Length: 429
Image (cartoon, rainbow, N blue to C red; front, top):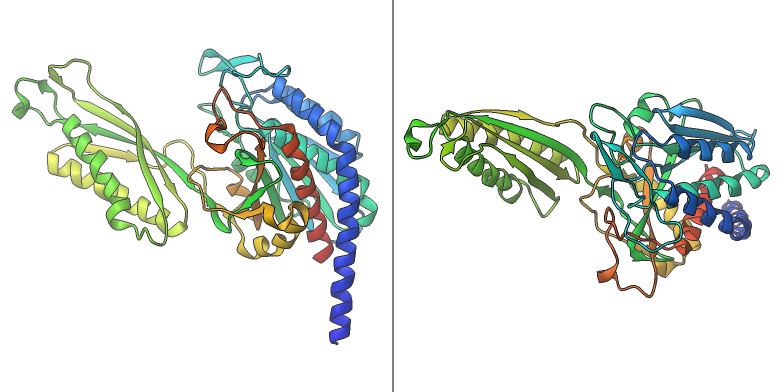
């Protein structure tokens, strides 16, 4: 029996190494096209739910691979299925498509000069978070895996998703809508993999975080109603400004005094306060808008219990009335990397990037709507390095800024990771 198990193990290992060798050769071959695709997307970005030309470009490419292609998913999303014709699991790979209303301040020959309408204004548009590289990497992986179709079993679903940065006001979009429209069904997806380029991680490195990798995000709004009075006679008022000040401070104590911070972390931030219009008038109403970030379900549940308790208690103590809207307009779950899937994929990550280049990382309090897929099926979301090696990390431009930049050379590892994780899962399951 031991010989049989050993033989099977060696067979699987040999099979994977042969496949990995094929992947490397095919990735080398497709890399110039990946760079070309990335430059095109970067030069012609489109905002969330408006990725019409982007979707058309992707669709035309996917048709060259003889895949079953579906368009118009969640408005502009594109989904393609590679069917090997042999029984096996279904692996999904996802890339996001949208740019941001950010003016590009780079000197690239393929920099964006595009503008679009956003909130009734004409704004510049830029791929300031690397979604251009995500699409190009997934297109590269689609070609590699299509060329290896005869060696594979099962099905592969390529998901090009709109509106990861959030749909325009009054609209819905992104991963949540794709899930509602059945993107993980027909065929039913077993696992999903996603990558995000990172401008502060060296080219050639990949970072992973088991379990909560990125935070749940829950925006909120608090409207405090008091009684207006002249600023010279505050005793005639019910002051919503003072009430708001106490509320802002008290909400911080949910994290500092109620959350067991040695086990989890959370953030409560007020980003906007509006009320009043003169120095000598105590207003009738003040509005607070903010965000909650949590990294596990227990912390999120605590926030949802404590927020209304704090808001009501402080308002009552001041004789004011307060209305809490939580969540406000959208809500992302925790980007949760399935522990078993993460462990199973670690050898592939190390064989692909090199053991010293696979970094265990702490969670981040940014959010990703990839989380909606992970609520339905096991998923793994990784960070791939895009920072040139000669640029110090402290001077590398941040995501969502006009100076944002990632090097084309970082995409090669991303394509290899997408292909190798898919092949490994299909072969072992």
